[in-house]
Image (cartoon, rainbow over all chains, first blue to last red; front, side):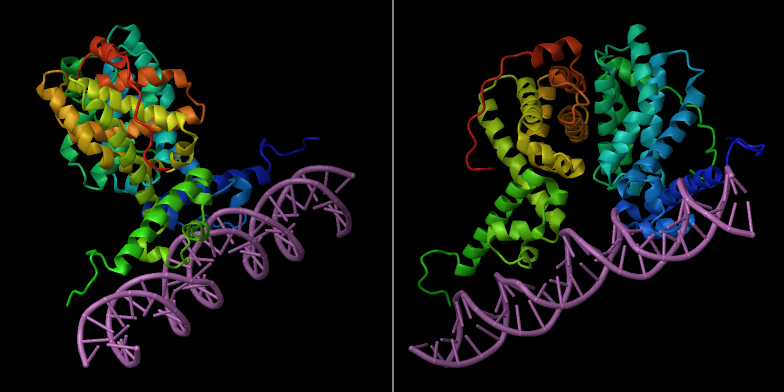
Length: 216
Length: 216
DNA sequence: AACGAAAATGAATGGTATTCGAGTTTGAAT
DNA sequence: ATTCAAACTCGAATACCATTCATTTTCGTT
């Protein structure tokens, strides 16, 4: 039965928490520097200061680790966005601010470039981690009569892949960064709001994001 | 100096053509059966009846071969679509028919499922191979006053990734196939045509595609 | 203090993309 | 017809890691 230990957590549980956290951090550091393919499990394990085999008691595979890394990135950004938008009155503007901010980060932050090389991983992470917010916004805006979205999940699935595709094209310089505005307009058009309204929404002033909490 | 040979092509050039063709065919066969990752260069080389090392005088890498395979698939489908749509009067309908047909194939043809596992490869191939047609259609429809597309390249970049994303979600059963209609509507909305018109366009009857030329 | 289950370790394994030196083919020149 | 160098092909050997697993270490319990 349970004993002494003031803390509810055993030493093992604490170490496991540290290890998992260290692995996600290390994974992020290495992957955002060299890309998933060039990152080796050895390097990540070394940086996290655990044995190479230990990684596999925390993650099923290299890809599984990468998924966790990207989910973390997405979740953190989603929370920072939420901190700004929860003061907005117009649900359509919340959505517009969200997608705009994601694209800005994806194209402006060097650390995202390598992550984009696995579009399905990052798009899926985006779909899952930001989905609860994005889908809620799409539905709110639809109920408010601003958007005309039939299936918010579908719309967000399309949007997340489109965002990744455009971000990739911009970082690879197939498209100029100046097209970000137009990208937002197009994504808003997708919601059925109409072109004029979309342009208006996209050009609203955008407050600054709060700073990152940790190194992620 | 040039001798006899009626044909302008040397024996080497002919063999190289055969080899490249055989490799693309073999690559398609193997990859669409087992997916890029499980497909081995050895198996592809064997099926194409060339040495394993020879593949590398035709393609820089496994991925490079995969790109050629997908480009071929896309190009063939683009031509088949073109054969139907070149009789259409409305350029907007040409675009609508195109995206609809691509999604139908991506989700309905078992052979595409494996290809979708490399979204950036297939989306890029789609962008490049169908782009000339799609971009032309977007511009025609815009000039005709049907669409309101500012940058057709951007719109097609977004559309190609969104198509791949939705197709993936449907084949993985994260979304029901019944959402294909709505997907087309959303992609049309992206062109700025407005929701009502988009729905009308998406529900037009669609003629059948001509049969595949070869085994691709 | 001693035990044993759970967790961690890192050397060994296995699978395969890619390289490379040897062997072949080709076709212009003789 | 023969020759020869260049171009091409071959497949065995290499290199590289993700992943596994036999061994060692840790830690809560007795």
